[in-house]
Image 1 (cartoon, rainbow, N blue to C red):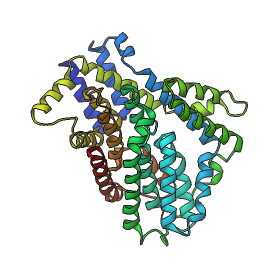
Image 2 (image 1 turned 90 degrees about the vertical axis):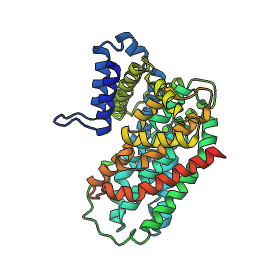
Image 3 (image 1 turned 180 degrees about the vertical axis):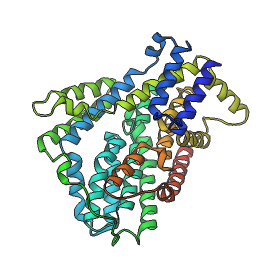
Image 4 (image 1 turned 60 degrees about the vertical axis):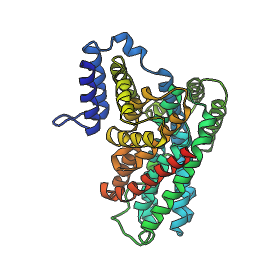
Length: 404
């Protein structure tokens, strides 16, 4: 009973995103829930350590180091600047920028891509006299969709891939078609909705300075790109993905010019803390077999997680209530380890669901925050106008693909 109370209070706090009267965010709430599991002896200190999936954390950490290498090497700035020659053709620029965001997110994690590209796009588009809103919405939406195509595109996919021991190549082959289809459909929806509002809109004044962005360094960028290619190659072998990521990250830290302190400063320690806390909370309720009991109850009511429609719907709802990672951790114990397609559907659906509302994905919030710093306001309503149809269409594509 204690485990259930702690779980409900923790996940309610995660859903709300805050505790009234306190300066707690989702990470702080999850950490307090994990502490409560230990303090009230639901989980012993030894079990709290052993239940944390360290291979997943190592994979996440290694990828963050590699992304830091590319960011500090100016690769993201260079990539954004290289497509700016298309600004006089807004429709084509929107397509190219969304494809670029999707491809980079599939390899380097969507949150980091949005963090790097959003301020550059907002600044450059305003300077070119275009309305940045549709392009920034396209950035957020395409980064989420693109990240669904691989097991390293976002934190929840990394977790699902590690826990489910999913083959990297097989997942990509399965997820790439619905991801590409959803990306093209999203582009079409954004273009139709904003086709008459892409240019000729003056939004405040241009703020910021290009000097604030890491400038392009050919050697450092080349090192980063070669490390990504090496990593993908290693992922196609039988070598554990976490060891591959750590080895490549360690090689990048052996640098004469790139300071380790600068690279480590770009590691998202809050996200890693969230993972650790959620592992402990889920372990606490799993000891009392609560997820299995819930699944048995739902099965009696005709709800079957092996059904693509049921699993997609559950994943989408939970992801928008609790956010992707907490939702995925809640569903994983209920999945059949032999039925790999269910794991594939969970990964893609939980990622697609992040586009539904502004709060559904960290990538969305990063884009809005960076846009606001450039004087571009994107409201909850503005995002929902395109986010809802994009998500519904993306999830429909996924269900059709899974049923074929």
